[in-house]
Image 1 (cartoon, one colour):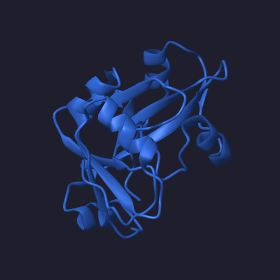
Image 2 (tube, rainbow, N blue to C red):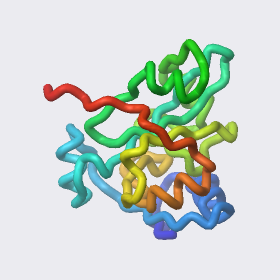
Image 3 (cartoon, rainbow, N blue to C red):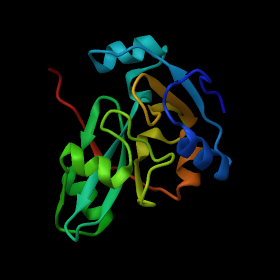
Amino acid sequence: MTTDATSRFDTSRFDADATARALRVDVVERPAANSLHEAAALLGIEPGDIVKTLVVKRHDGGFLLALVPGGRSIAWKKLRTVVGVNKLSMPDAATALEASGYERGTITPIGATGDLPVYADERIVGRRVALGAGRHGASAFVDADDLIAAYAATVADITDEEPVR
């Protein structure tokens, strides 16, 4: 695991979870970006290799994590079908923090609180991806297949292409 030893953030929960799951993670410091394409250029990867981890609220009050590749968004009907529920929603930022232990923009399954089930879009399979590192100013690079295995993630077609803006 590669981390910046001078970081002012407590990375112990993230590091401990990655170690416990034998998950090789490379954490890279990076400046803020104003767009997906800018972030991809800063990291030297394709936009689809950046994966957003989104906290999703179930109708019963439980939560799950959805792994969504860059340039795509949750396809609610598809995700509801895979989860087997009639209603899912995006919680507000405070609720997402409470559910995952991470602020929006930093959310990752690695070290997330609550042992939340993970649903990964099938498009990340076989790729090395960058996702939240549990803190601002950093990205965690991981083999998506290893991440999926480490969290026993359900893999399915759960996204749609985002419209070009």
